[in-house]
Length: 466
Image 1 (cartoon, one colour):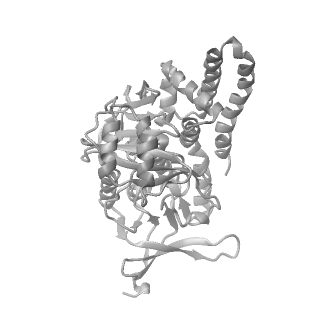
Image 2 (cartoon, rainbow, N blue to C red):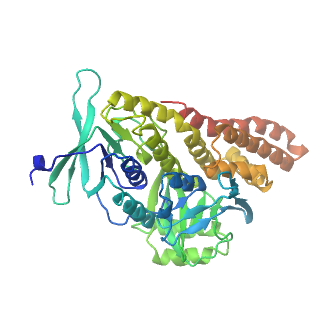
Image 3 (cartoon, helix red, strand yellow):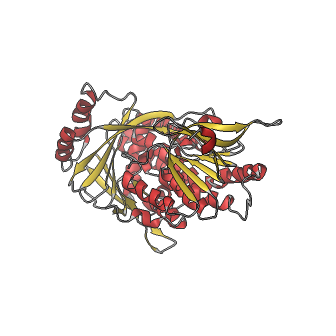
């Protein structure tokens, strides 16, 4: 078949059959749009992140009619978090879900199994075609006035044969390493660290059915059970990643990470180090950019990234698809060929998504900065204060974890609690210093407050931009 013979027209082309791509295909296909979903490799993916779906993400999944995708994959219910610091623990349960008046529940699972279920759901949706092809370029149409408009894609199969597909709208969701992001922004992900992950077998966690955060040096460690016998551990390594090929990475795990783990976990950690492959994933930040390119939308990690410390990525992704489905519904946009109306709706989408994504994005980055304090004195004061604040219980954990879980969507509550942590940290540090170091505590008030401001305000500011 020649390239010209393979030309096919659709209402919507989606690049990438991951979290966003599959749910978007399902959403728009069920609205009667003719959808083409393109993925370079339809084999079960094997990733170390995207394995904990917060309650807010579960609710968005239900809204999209995809709640069954978390079933039948040996997933584990998650009821909150346990935080471990210097041998002490604090239990942080999810709050009640207002939609059910029952304790909220998340779900952890093997990422690949979840993606397979999403792909099955997309394939079973009327009006959706799925093809295993690698998209190489966007097809553009020159316009006399304004920038060129995207009208389709060119893709290749594994033999190198070229195919061209046309649609008035293309959704690009090709992940953190997106090659089409440059169409809407010159920004690139600001990578601060890497997660190194592997699976520990038959580990009994301090808080069963909970995510775990260990406030270790130099940066945090995450653990959560993803199936009956498997527990995922993710070790954050700031700066340059040690080489795995010459054994430096394994040595780092043994000499730096293992001593930071609780005694009950360390043996399984060291045992897994001898048998499991150490895989890494970059952690970064990319503030959202408004989609203004005619004929194209960029979504998911291609458009907006936050540190995966809080597990909020999938919650943002599913909520994005749910709200975009409404903004571009046949009632609001009868024909996707109406580029002017589509761009107008995308501008509304950019600001409307702030309601849920701002808290998740800012919380993830601010918490990471605190939890990776290492030898920074002021950040270490804030880290100790944060743990002590959690120990107070009540609203001091209920609202912060409500923000983290996507159940509370009010950024001002985040700002309130963040600075409440700062003042609490100053108080306990001054009390610890005593009167003999009162002059030091006085200076600390200003240095710690400054550290708190430069930790959260730049991320809040980034959310106000287009």
